[in-house]
Image (tube, rainbow, N blue to C red; front, top):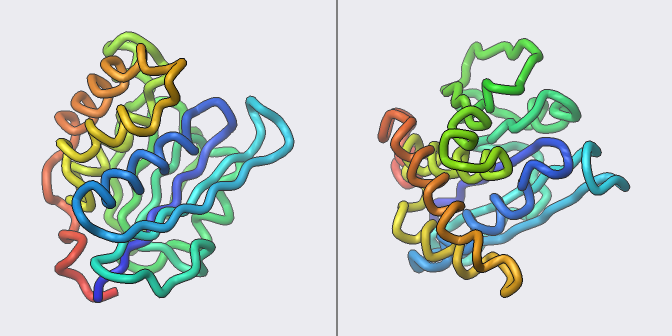
Length: 192
């Protein structure tokens, strides 16, 4: 059985929790198992926020709070240390290069810079930067496919936010198009 972990970290208001929910739902749509654990600081905006998604091709054995991660999306440099500590050699790391200001030792990682906030502005709203990153992540890793992500966005937004589905899908597609495809090892082809 193959399990893959994704940690997403950022600051409140960047859409980290929605992004992780979309990835988990996309995996379920594709017939796999998913587990999700989100946490955030005491502030709505600007505080720490992170989530962990575990995707497996069968019942998941890893706890939803993991000691190591196969991959990470870094939306912002604040509060990133716990996620960086969990990267293992060969981890896939996507960095929101528009706002990420800290240096990262990339030795031993497969890293991709994505100007997600810039792309989100081009799409129509900076608040879709997390969806840009999820789209790029999907193209880069193959963990989930774009059709499932499109459906997961519609399924994840509450009824009072359904008017934002189209914009978020456009952001996913823009991120998917901005990343080189299948540069990272395919999710199912690498030993855990």
